[in-house]
Amino acid sequence: MSTTYVVITLLAAAMAGFSAGSVFFHAQWVVQPLADYRVPRALWPWLGAAKAAGAAGLVVGLFVPVVGAVAGIGLVLYFAGAVVTVTRARWYSHLPFPMMYAAPVIASLALGFTA
Image (cartoon, rainbow, N blue to C red; front, top):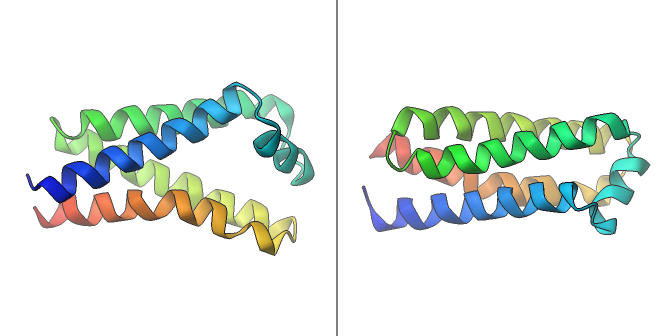
């Protein structure tokens, strides 16, 4: 296991965890766009839980690689869904945000599969 893989994985987990916490604590800069994208409020806790589970799975994946791979794939799918949601809402200027969160997850998966 390389140091780069560990650092990138922990960065990805921290970013996903931060994003989850932002939803759980209703940070205005997160929940207002969700409302603008017309994401039903009833789904917000589930979206936060999915990100939190993905973050935890990435950390566990440092010790149990299959868990990390599944968590990483789940987070990539989550953020791909976020890109679709933002695109459907026609808020193209917001597209970089889910991609910014997906990038370290993708890097972690790539480094994990090459190890």
